[in-house]
Image 1 (cartoon, rainbow, N blue to C red):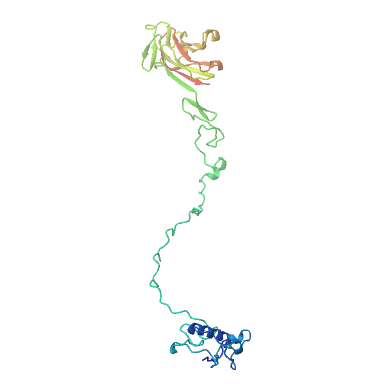
Image 2 (cartoon, rainbow, N blue to C red):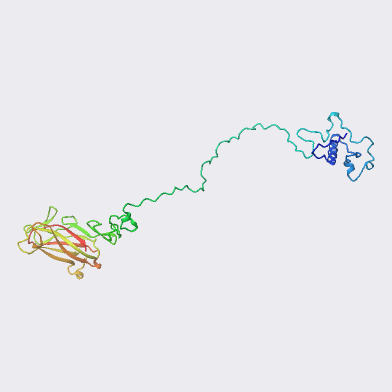
Length: 337
């Protein structure tokens, strides 16, 4: 039979309609019979059949008279429990929380995952697009001790002067001093060759008369007649400009008279006679008393100019023995003026 349970203090009573629906469902599942219209009792609402469309027993003449409530389920003890009966894990009051069914934990419960505690493969590696680390700022180097008194721009210390078109030593002069060695000089910030030396006994020089002597070439009145004792070297190294040829000579007698002992010449070997007379650019005689002392070196100078039309021609420097006195020739030096 239906038993109406008293509501617990502080909790709302189960709605009669919900009770009726639950009873109908349990009875239908247990016995397979249809619910019937039960008479309403005091304090209890009618069953679903009464509530729907206001129908009562008159609407169901096929139902027999009998006690109120559905028949009991076969089986006795297996009868369906009342809606209000408690079930493990479920409370009987409407609105109370329903506890989850107790279940066995999985076999791997509590076991850490295989990679637990292991750092990821890229742990500690900076991302590829991360900015490279920057060095902490450093203090600028202290200025040199003499920077405060340096005459150079910006306080830099003076440097050795070089041929570069600048005042390296900050003395107010640019490219001063011997910066390019003996055979060149500084012009326009570049070392330009200004000196050429041709040894009299060298392979580039020729001889018509005379003989080799230690460090040079010589002639005397006993062994040589008048003739060209040294000539050459037919160089093309001299551009257009003014030059000086210095013939280094010696003689044994500087007081007998002041006669000419040799003639020195600069000849354009590629020139034509109509253009330059004898193709000689310059010549002069060297006299005995020009020498400072017997057998002392004397640089007999001869100035000449190479016009632009003759630049690059082969030049010949010649020493002509005049058969007056012993003459020794060491070298011919040519410098740019």
